[in-house]
Every structure is written in C-alpha cells, then in structure tokens.
Length: 360
Ligand SMILES: *Cc1c(COP(=O)(O)O)cnc(C)c1O
Image 1 (tube, protein in one colour):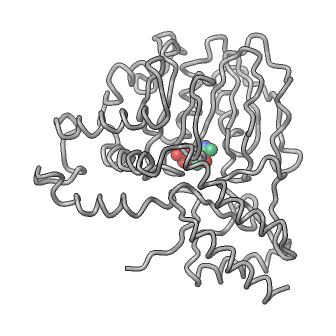
Image 2 (cartoon, rainbow, N blue to C red):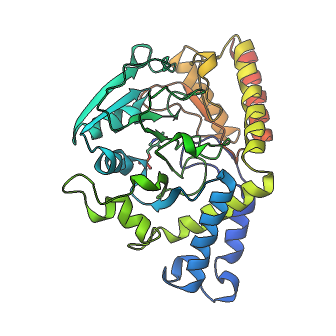
C-alpha cells in the first residue's frame, strides 16, 4: 500500500486510523453481518451510530441544548438557499463577500429577497478580509452572512464582524473543527463535511432552536425546513448513513487527539512551517494579506504560470498531490486540514526548497 500526501481542498485527506477502522468493519459491522452501507437507517444499529455521532460532536464543540445539530444533504450549496428560506422573514439580509462561496450564497439569497452586499474584498481578488468593525448593517436585515474561511483564496476571519445585534450566519466548511468554535456567537453555523471532517455529501448545520419554526418563506420545500429536519432527528428521509458513520469516527479521533484547542495548536504549527518558508523564499510567495491568512488553505505562486505548472507536475511525481490552485485563481494551493500530518507539510516545504534551488 502506498499513500500520497494529499493537499486537496475537498474532498480531502482523512485520518488513516479512521479509514483502517472502516475497512475492518466493512464486511461485518460489529457482528451484524453487513456493512453500514447496507443497513436500514431505521435499525437500532444505525440509530446508535447517529446518536453517538451527534453526542460526540456536541461534546467536542461544546454545544448547549439551545442549539439543534442537523445532518443534511445537498452540500454547502443547498444551504445558500436554506438559510434565506428559513431566516429571511423581512426579506432583507446583508452579505459580506470575501470569495466565491460567499458570492454564490449572496446570489442565491437574491432569489428570495433583498440581499445587500455589505462589504467586499473583490477589489483585490479576495486577498484580505474587510474591516467589519463598523459596517452599515441594514436596520431591517434578518441576518448578516459570512464565509468564515475562504477555501479558494486562503483568507480567514480572525475576528467576527460586528453585526450590531443582528443574527450572524456563517459558512465554516473549510475550517470546521480546525479550532474551537463558540456557537453562541451565531444564529446558524454550518459546513460541508468534505473539507475537514468526512466524505462528501453532507452538511452539518448548528441552528439556534428559537430560529427553527414553521414561519419560513412560502414555497419552502418540506425537506429544506430546518423544522422538518430537527423534528425528525435528521431522518425525515434516508440520511447519508455512511457519511454520518465516518464523521462519527472522525469526531472520536478528534477527541482522542485532545479536542479542538489541541487541533488548533497543531494546525498553527503546520501552517507556520509553510508560511515562514513562503515569507523567506525568493521564488514562491503567499497571495494573502498576512493578518488574514487561513490555517487550512494556503495559496501561493511563483509569478510565472509555466513555472507553477512545472512545480505542480513535479510535486505530483514526488507524491505531493492536488497542489494546483483553484481554476479561477491559478498558482498553487496547499490545503492542510486536520488529517494532514506535520510530516506532510515538512515534505512539501523540503520539496519547495529543492525546487527553488533548481529553478531560481
Ligand atoms: C466547498 C465549499 C462550499 C460548497 O460545498 P458543496 O458541498 O460542494 O456544495 C461552500 N462553502 C465553502 C466555504 C466551501 O469551501
């Protein structure tokens, strides 16, 4: 067996321990004679899996009974519609545009009401987070929306915006469980799990219970009402059973690793290794304003497209995969999520140093 260092932005690297456990349980899950993929979602076996996953997730993040935890399908992208359908009572919301995912969410919300662009960093190719300490929040806004870690551009909000009392809604897809999360700061906080938690095909939404009502926009599909999902324990229909099972294992792995504060320290250490090298390099440079740098997604360039392509090709041959930047920005991007070991970043930096020597 040979495993590469996988720097994919998502779907992305998973802990090897979790994959091995899943492999072991594939044919016969705990003596029931079938795999988790084959069992009824109404079975006692699966009920234990989903209950335990939710309990471990709540414990890991520290989520009180004031919030519901929902395991939903349709990806982060369906939440772009679910958020306005469930929350846009006045049909007004303010969006801070820090990248493509925030922009897509804003465009989707405009289908349902007045979606204001409260601030944006598009003027400098989303390479920074705007100052959000005193924005002109709309008095009638139902919520203020952010994308907290910008997967494509590699920026992160290190301070949440001042929403002037309005609900904060946040997409944390690419920084989910990479650091402690104070859910009490949010009305809704959600993330697709395929970036930093599990396989593709599921979103975890943490929704404040008082926001879960029948008072949704007319025409909201039953499946997209948070209330339907909350009332049915995320099993109104068949959920993504296998994904829930793998995520449950990842929650246990994270607890075993020491929890989210420990993960943050580990992630800081990994990111520092790469950023320090980028800051010292004469060939490569990071593309993001230093104070807004993400710990998870690190974009960088040489400034020469052909050299970038050569780098990606040679890195791949050396077992460092998926380093090509997003198709809309070019260059390179290393996603160094929770499951990327420190040794993986060491290998990347060593390879970059060698490439620099050979190509400068
Ligand atoms: C990947 C990503 C999405 C989209 O997720 P899908 O599951 O493909 O819909 C949304 N937001 C952020 C921040 C992402 O990184």
